[in-house]
Length: 417
Image 1 (cartoon, rainbow, N blue to C red):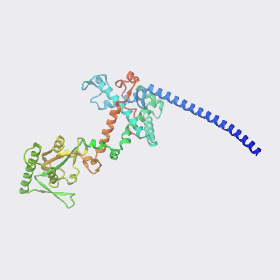
Image 2: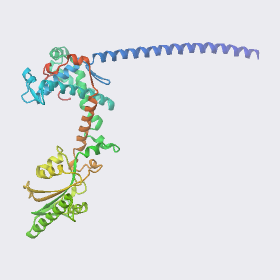
Image 3: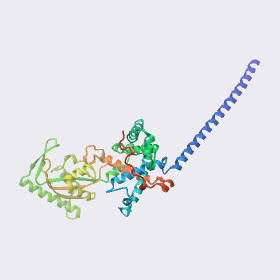
Image 4: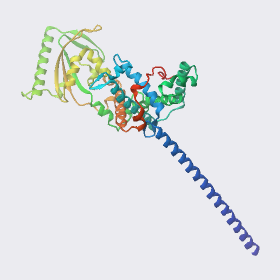
């Protein structure tokens, strides 16, 4: 028992010494670790401070220094002159009137700030939703190498000599090129290449809000020359000339429908058009059965509207003027085209609310470009709203003037390789 007690006492002393050693080790390790963290944080803070101090443009963690801004300045000046009518890089041109009480020089400076804001915001949005992949980095590197090879024989030193007059160097060029790449990719990263991410958001209201900018109408075409004889499947038809009796009947029907519409719109008479009447008309005459359920969606500049307007412009113009719930009549005399017989008669229009989810119908020719256009709209809106938060520092205000930059048409990547 005595030996056992003695052994236990010895073990206790050893354990105490070991614990003290472990404690000193942990204390030392923690002190070293915290020291490294503090040094790292201080270093990062210093680097960020230096970067911010050198920044000419800043949006959150995205910055542009002098060389990068100089690159964008030389490029934007070239882009502005390319689209200006008879634009030449002369003092006379920049002092000339650009309309709305501003000179071309003033307009250039204002638009350049917007251009920089868009690039800065687009870069921040890109990193908020994604990051550069290995394939992206390789594409950027190949594109830069091709340009340096083409312009400077692959020599970075020679490249720097050639671009010195523009106020940037190779490193600035690389940074700016990468920013342009991310700015181009940002919209696709957020919304998908053709806006499909918008459609996937079934809980969102953006698609419906955008669809409400369209004019949604049902159209009843009544010809006074031909009638359609549909095949058994209702997918194609033949045009059969009306006889005298059929033509007279149709002319009377057109006048009867017109009376009902007038009574409704003017609030007179005891008989007026109803949606049930219009639904019945849609099942006959020369109406397109493929559009009966969905209706037509018109919006200036869209593919479907532009194509339809080529032959039925008066219908589109009248529809765009209408309010929801209105009816209208448009008389038409459309010339024959590509073997058809044209159209002579009347088109009746009923404008009604857009239908939720219409953009999901991939077969609707009037909404074939809906998602890309909606993505363009909301992306531009984001750039505009967030662009107001971009900071132009005193460095920028004291030095940068786009109008005095040389025009850069050569030292830029035009095609990603």
